[in-house]
Structure formats: C-alpha cells, structure tokens
Length: 240
Image (cartoon, rainbow, N blue to C red; front, side, top):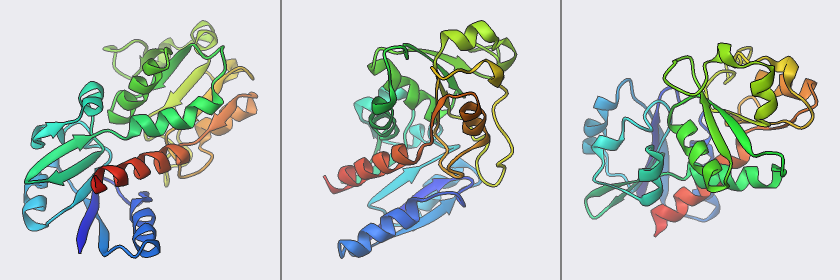
C-alpha cells in the first residue's frame, strides 16, 4: 500500500483527503491519505521517520519553512520560493510547487486586456506562487501586507491604487471557514465592474472578500479550480 498525506495547521478545511481517497477508490489504487496537523515544522523529521510516504502535500503555514528539510527543489518551486508537494524518490525528498500551475490555468479564462496590474494580498507561500504565475502572464504584481516591507500596506490602498490594479487576489487566510466574517481591509467602495477579484480560499465558496466585490459589480472567483488543478498535477508528479 502507498501512503500519502498533507501537513499544515489547521487542516480541518482541507479537501485533499476526500479528493485523493475518492480517486484511490475509483481507480482501485491500493493507497491511503491522512491529515497530519503539525504544531511546528520541527516535527517534520519525526513524521517521515515514523511513516513510509510516497508523497505529501504541504499547506499553510509550512510552504516556505519546509524547504530546508528537502533534498531538492524543481525549477518552479525554486523560482517561487515555496513548496506544496513533496515527492519521495530513491531516498530523496523533492519539493514542487503545483499552486502556480493550478492558479494560472484557473485565472486565464477570466482575464481581459485591462488586467495588466495586480494586487496580491499576503506574502506567504500561496502569494508567491500566485505572483510567479501572474508574472509569467506579463501582469505586473504589487504585494499588499500589514508590514511596510512590501509595496503597499492596507492603509495605503486608496481610490487611485484600486483604479490602477483591476485584478486583486486574496492569498491570506482571512475569511476562511470558520472565520467567515473576516476579510482583507480594502476600500471596497472603489471597486468597479472592470475589477476581477480572486480568492484562493474555497471554503466558503463565496467569502466576504468576494461578496463585497460582487456587490460592486466585480467579477469574482474562488480557489476551487486552482485546488483541483494543483491536486491533479501533484498526482502526476507522484506517479512519474
């Protein structure tokens, strides 16, 4: 039997166990998939010592801190600076980033010529993957953070900034179940029907961030297709 799983914290909202268990059953694959909530990434060496894994998914908050524990990174993971898939091969732990392709494929059908500049909310592993994908599409990226170390703080987002960036991607956990009444602190009143709001969160399907955008006429999209896309690519990696 092959063993797979996901590390992160929290993991109650993860769809991965259901997705892969259904896939194993449908394709008659002798494998299992389990959730491994870690309090700290320092628990990772003991985890892999106690289990014989074929592959692992990695979610927040460990997409960047996992890197020192790996033997190799593929080109995309190295370019992004974050990992969400680990392949165990010949005693080596190899890191990949499938978030980038998952996001890229899901956002392309929604893009219009006016979407030349994007605000990426957050600076973690998901934000880096999204930024990498957007730049590959020749879209300018500006990061928004509570820290002044990035392009904008939330307090600096005014009417002019919102008007200049018609694509806004939420890569923070704000609004994720169960904290569904939270959302990034944007001046939502300045959004228009030319804006595209994308939330990497998929539970709930319509976050408060997306709901506020929709009320202003913006096109909105959650992260479910991104999730399916990255999962399919992870499966290809584990089987190759």
